[in-house]
Length: 89
Image 1: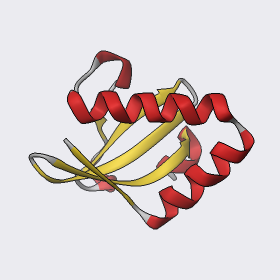
Image 2: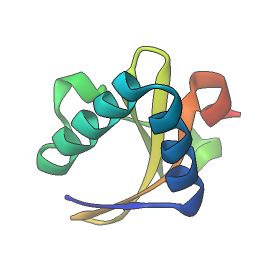
Image 3: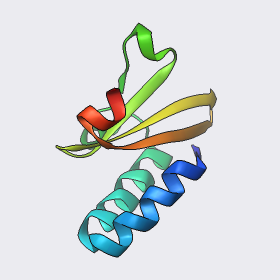
Image 4: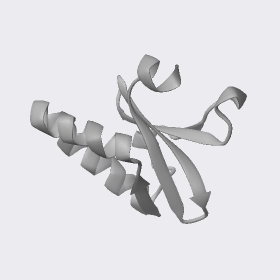
């Protein structure tokens, strides 16, 4: 799976890397797992409800999610990262 990050996600990842190196490493690990198997159990991949049309989510840690849209069978575009409330509202 090829991964593309929105400018907002890139900006957020830079902030996270400066503030929390452990979380930054976990994000890299989860994105790697996603790239080789988007259904890996630790990602807890799930489709979001109808109000978030054609969007999916993966878990980084219990409190942090990343939301993405599938562009094709082998391309995903990540558009948000944050807590449950931040990404789903």
